[in-house]
Length: 460
Image (cartoon, rainbow, N blue to C red; front, top):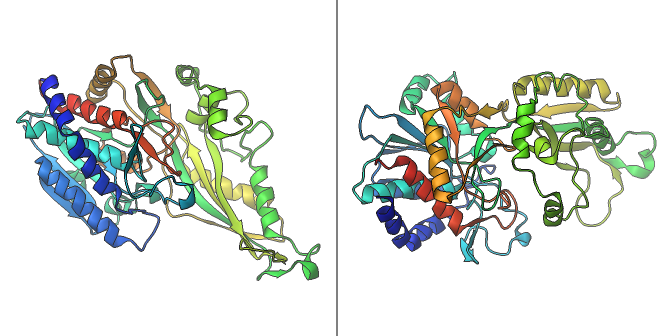
């Protein structure tokens, strides 16, 4: 049975890639607020693919911002229901001059597809649709009832879904009922190796903020005031440097109170130790820098971290400008593990800054949302075990279970409101340049994803 449908998928290869190409062309950057038309057109494109695939009740939910997309296919009320999650928004493509190709025009070169979102996450979204399409077009039966949740804002705090499941939404129960399922298949992860199959069994949580430090009430002359008035950029850098010690250990009081790195977690990371020399060559760095007492992979997957994503303030244009700036800002993301609570962690950060900032300065912390905690999969659940088997069959080699250093913040909200297990899936490369220039996904990985989903859903 698999042989016949896999032959059909191969016959449809060019059509599938052409549909993928069209979706890549939409500039669905969720951190921008001036591209509602792009999101509307992208959602209409996806909706047309879902209807063509044979799904029912395909719906665009636009009450909370850009369209959330829902669809379903019910085979038998006695079957379990899987909710497939993916997102169609993307990170900004800038800096554009570092791209070899137009980021919004899918290019195929040497077996790789290049474009913004090919790996994160439009590729997995298309893979879900096309797997279902191929099953139904061949008159075959689904082993599960299927629901679809494609969101427009994963890269920017999932604003729409958070609002939909907010306690302030009088219709919250309606959406809980609409998306009710036995398990979520979150198609927004990747493989940890190029050619070896891995399944993610846990993701870190994340909370992000902007730290703004203010000195004088305006930019001032560095000759007239330099030496007697504090510079907020200097203070910002000093505060940030105090957050870590020489062992790369975070110094914020109580930060590690709910971190419980077990020997089992550490051993699980040893299954996929990285080639440090290859990583250094790939990234162009002289050495790796990580928390003392742990391996690079352990520090990346099962330990919390604080990263400064960007700093700005003062004069950044062409030429010099001798000033002491009024303000300096750092964008910060904090990855969380175990039972770390994002609200508690931000309170610890505020206390740390209050206790360490010089009285010459004021500070403010800005947040778009409260963040999310870590999420883990119950690996004993039926859907995960089935996905584990299907992945091994497709790759024809053993599957390694791993924890992922990244985050899918909305998973906590979905878990809380739907009360179901969450299974993570993705076949992209660990070096696909997600969020960076020249994002890419191999054609082989893309079609492996389609075939694995077919294996998972196809009734014998």
